[in-house]
Length: 261
Ligand SMILES: Nc1ncnc2c1ncn2[C@@H]1O[C@H](COP(=O)(O)OP(=O)(O)OP(=O)(O)O)[C@@H](O)[C@H]1O
Image (cartoon, rainbow, N blue to C red):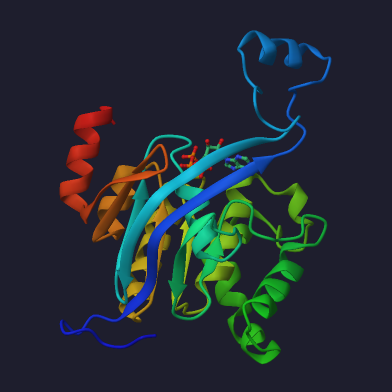
């Protein structure tokens, strides 16, 4: 891919009529517990295999993302934002439609694979290796990553297991590890939401840098100000459908009008 179009834009992600369906096993339909009784009262579970339910989370989404863009994903809870990002990262199969990407997108999410029993220090090293950095590069950037995260501002926490961190501290470390590398496509799922103001400002600055370094950044956030300050384009999802795709200001205005947020 990466062929230049007539406008000189280079596509990094193309989603073509993407549908994503979760199949949930072990639902209460057909079993004897209280939730099953509730489910029967609500009339669910008819005509489906026992205990399997489908959730159609993304419905016919199409868009093309270009290099140098920072794209915000907005929408009310459960509208399909995280699901769409996971599909772009190749972590979820599409039911129909296709996702084409230039290079391997990196998904930085609330569930990013850091090991809670290992220290922050070990996670920086493992996270760096997982992103394809050499030990030498990790050594060089280690202090920068720790400083950026601010984990050690209130004491020597980086040598403690991550399970002892607050959710904000863990999110900050995850972001700092991922942001230490330049990505072709970096996807950030709510990582900034738990950080404090100082950290948010620092991360927003880093997102702008990553964007300048010719990558594409996707950012899921419920904070309209963060989206406004970092993104030049916004996709608005609702019930799995792409309601609007356009310049940040236009889409946020429509979203705020509709949701009152
Ligand atoms: N692992 C899963 N199995 C089954 N259904 C799921 C799973 N993950 C998400 N869903 C469903 O898919 C739909 C979209 O969820 P998703 O997490 O993508 O929304 P979201 O827009 O990221 O929400 P939020 O803003 O609350 O984080 C919801 O109806 C949710 O219940």
